[in-house]
Image (cartoon, rainbow, N blue to C red):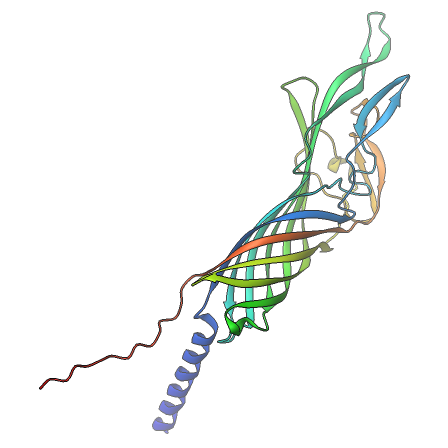
Length: 302
């Protein structure tokens, strides 16, 4: 009985050692940079031109947050750790972090906006003041998934395909400046769950180092959509914890219109899809290689 148990333990140790060697002997780090493009309800314009009396004013687009997130092209930076599930490196487990910033190439925009005052006659009047706007939207992702590289056993060139389950932290920030120095901001952010799909081609360029080019598509807010309709969750300048309001519903805001105001207006919000694509280039680095078997040579002595 003891011998049988001992044999079983030895067999399990042998199998576990074999599995560990097959899975974890070739960990790889991938770091890269990409060009991001917003799709669906992530893309849009965050400003629009309006008319106040006989004057043109530059104001926040009434579709921002209600119908889209005003996203434009940007840059993405990412890092991935990969673990092989077989000795040929064709099936891999992937864990990664990435940051995608949108509106990267947009500069601040300037114009005029209306401001209500009480004039010397104690009457409410509206005058124009200069204003400058700046805006960005970003996504920070933690993801894990699987990747297939069917011809990686060649050690030269291989296509690869992958899918990942993502934990996404999505948010935007809008700032306005009424003179050269003083700015006031409103920011909105939320946690969402999504997936992404990844495909590309990788090639070895030297021992332990490779190059990859690929395309990635993110579905950023598949789960946990929500709109906060409470008056306390109003989107207004000076607030830093507003919701992205991506579910159909209603919320309050003070950021719209041709005249700066503190009056909280109720607006309608449609259900929105926050999706984006990325074209990237990356460097693959083998963290360590398994030691090669070396045959010891012995010299014959006379």
